[in-house]
Image (cartoon, rainbow, N blue to C red):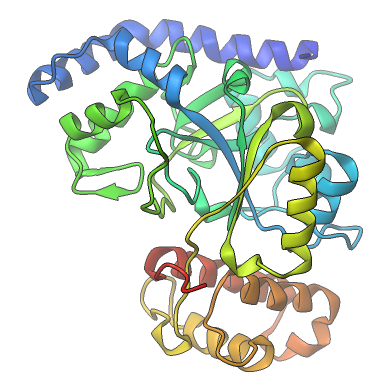
Length: 359
């Protein structure tokens, strides 16, 4: 399934992780001893492989360069594409030769994707490793909905503790996961925050990782910055690789919701709904992402909300589509890129402070 470039990228990260494994084991042993947890490192790594799931967060209503929504493209193409192919992102738009994303990948994967003849379609797809069963996915920062991949996809994923734009040094694969685990345990001990959950000590984290998953957690993780990034190498086919699509409840009864439900039926995987996030328009925080966000929220609500609607994912999406389709409507706010960035920050505020949907 992997091209030579994809196999080389996976092999490079595996080699780096093997090099760093002895030092990582020492760190893990120290944290295990400090927590009083009677676990073996190999037991924890096995639990990650058994229970971890890759999730790819996305906004289904965002527009691609050709005018289709993300949901429409998934429906028509049956595959999940990278930023190098789509030209859209819920992070930075730097996926082009010589751009920041290209440079990070060159470092991360040992130049595997910069070899002559490597095409954009070969580039990795970015996901998160959902270890704590967060219903909003591992990285809600990047979208209100997510695809949950089948366990087999773990074998062709690489991992970093922290987003690749920070050029992380703690890398791993599902079989050589110790460097990522060591970084996770060290960060948990230092901050008391683990994978978006505050007040979690090392012992509690390990106990959670090792338990048998009988049901998904009902508490949103809200992980905007604190996550394990996964880079999935090779094609991501909806029919072959997806276990479930998990949808924000604000898309019930919308075209995007209908499309995602149809995709799930056609490809034979589950359609799930998480609890979502919503805020009253006067409840948008002015500190978390800056003073420009509350007045933007008020404008979005005044122009796009239906009677009784709070601020939620689908409402922000209506405004984002408008910025692309009718930029003159937003010209008073400056360049469209600035408004789209502010809408992205409004979404971050919603994830951070929003209450579960009442729908």
